[in-house]
Image (cartoon, rainbow, N blue to C red; front, side, top):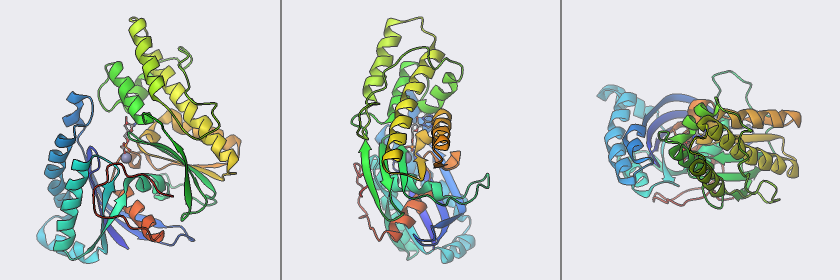
Length: 346
Ligand code: KG4
Ligand code: ZN
């Protein structure tokens, strides 16, 4: 099944065409035919975060540009459409004005080319992206289930147990800020540009992780919930009270605290659920320290660790074809209506 997908939930406009095959038993296979992402980082950077109406305007501007890059001139466009079986578009979660832009554009496009259109869940896209082929030619994941899934993005921090591709249960999530949001807010405190995650990572590489004992909220609680707003506030007070603080040490100690909580709670969930693997996803999955710590903790327990290639951690449309295909295997349909607060149903 060849799927054309549209992603406009936040500040990346993205289109992709992916060949999806396989069943839940054999595990789906994906072959990426085309993938285009236009980042709006520069537009939102002066505001220190994403401005919904600016995002909408940029999506409207970028969609035809990316479309032209993939579909080219009229003859190529027509021939390529002949090979496409279905269209999928992100319907949530995200910024509603941004989501609507993608949905309306997808409806027009699908109608014009007489294709079926399915709504896709952005979080399912992140979660199942570990199934994408790796450039490093790692063997296809097997012995995955039962697995523990950790989704870490700018809007979410969620732990799930996956007993198969079809069955999953949310174990817990953040009670306040998402971990990516904490990275972005701490970056702003340290006067680093938006988005803050990669900037914190860069600065942290020059600092000492044990320099400042920032709190590790909820690390010893037996539940699978998280809280990151107190950690961010501790950084705020520390910087305010230590005007001469070494900012690389602040970044490194903050990153250490955030990653320690994520790793400890994920490993505890893995033990409780006798997981054979950990699957990591979302923009913060691009964080090297988090990847390394999860990989090494998993290794000492003989658990597999799967994470998509770096380019598929932050938002893209390839992951939307993955989410849409898995939803199709799960026989789950999402209405074509923007749902900003959509979660990941069991
Ligand atoms: O998944 P994503 O692209 O968008 C959402 O669905 O939210 O995630 C974006 C988030 C931002 O908060 C960004 O700062 C964070 O991912 N991020 C990182 C890194 N790269 C992106 N956080 C920590 N380390 C990174 N290397
Ligand atoms: Zn995302």
